[in-house]
Image 1 (cartoon, rainbow, N blue to C red):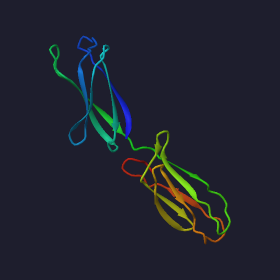
Image 2 (cartoon, rainbow, N blue to C red; image 1 turned 30 degrees about the vertical axis):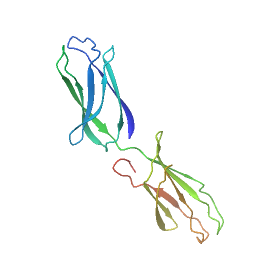
Image 3 (cartoon, rainbow, N blue to C red; image 1 turned 180 degrees about the vertical axis):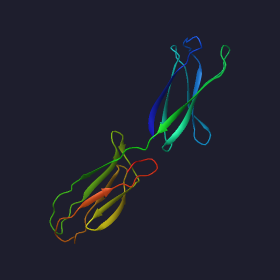
Image 4 (cartoon, rainbow, N blue to C red; image 1 turned 120 degrees about the vertical axis):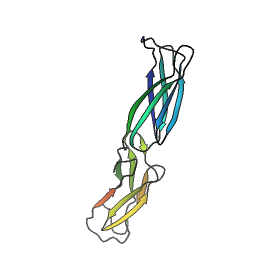
Amino acid sequence: GENIEFTAAISSNAAVAENSILTSLFIYDNGWILLGSDISDINGDVSIYVDITNNPGNYQFKWVTDENINYQKGEYIGNLLIDKAITQISVSNLSNYSYGAPPTITATLSIPLVGPIVAKPLIISFAGMNYSLITDTQGQVLFTPPVDTPSGTYSFVVYFAGDLSHLK
């Protein structure tokens, strides 16, 4: 998930900031789910930080203010689009090597500026064979070409097929 700040400004019809109003944020995902609540400050502002773990898609969100002595319950419904995360693969220690002494090559799957993607399959294509390896807690897989690979020039391709939450 990704931590997102949702903010709202609570005011009356006269555009006067309203403080001390309990405000709740919901998301619709097969029913309304409470994401968090907070009390508006002296400027009428409310901030709720939410760790979004929903699958990518279009969602509705709803702000609800509680009824009090002066005001009726208020509600605002808006739309929220959650996109698939962009992924990146980096490869290190890919170089020439001598027959019988292949290097261990590291491929890392990550979301740029966010961090590693764990427990996902990377497909490595080398010397006409495909190998499926699962990323570790650092988003990495280690691959050592077979020792008996004949000398020559080979292409080395690493790819991620994508999933419900991540682009390929």
